[in-house]
Length: 279
Ligand code: KIV
Image (cartoon, rainbow, N blue to C red; front, side, top):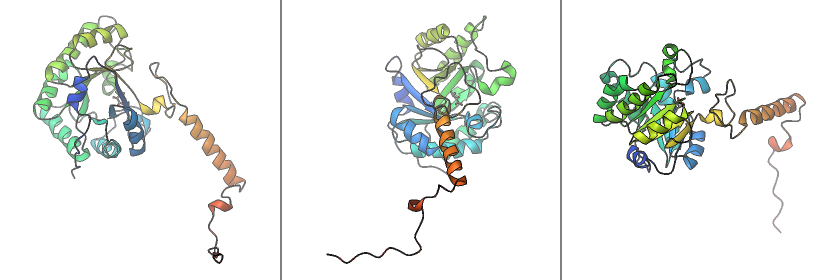
């Protein structure tokens, strides 16, 4: 199945052109209603593989499949009119070789209508990023903490301290040279993120990487207070929707049990009320 790709008002080239300008506003989205709200305020709606943890209750992003990304990708693309949807490539869909990455990136784009993909990895993924970008697949790179490598990184730790700074800088330069149109810096110390932002000519999008990046991204359910299993230090809560939902559902349950709901206005009469004579 292929999705139609409308001409979008924000495309990878527009994001690239925002380097050093007004900060680029990004959030994740996984469903059409949330994508519509994100679309009204943001430049990029990322269909992150965080969907696995946030919506499907998975313990990590490793179990996320192409089918899940396509399903959520299509939902988000439907909700985006002016912002740019970007789809995460799930674990196992691109690491084997550039040809595998191309096959799956092309499928994500064709079946969702999104104009770009994101993949995790620095210098070791540069060959793949170059292969994709030369064949019409715009790539957002993702370096620093790369959650799909949690088992080799040894946890969700800050990346770029203790002598790691040079290798994170090298990753940033490698993904830029390979043709990425932007790069996510996750959990990178703010001084290093600032130096990377100054060094690169492509925009940096920070998540836990301080103020000096060219843009910022958060997981939407984190900042809305909907995902409450854990709260990384870099998350600022802009809403408490989880608490509001809990209160609303508790009120509903109490009213069902006490037979206060449904009230007369929520029920249907057996006979339609007759209209009175016209005066
Ligand atoms: O999967 C995701 O939501 C992400 C963002 C946190 C950058 O990769």
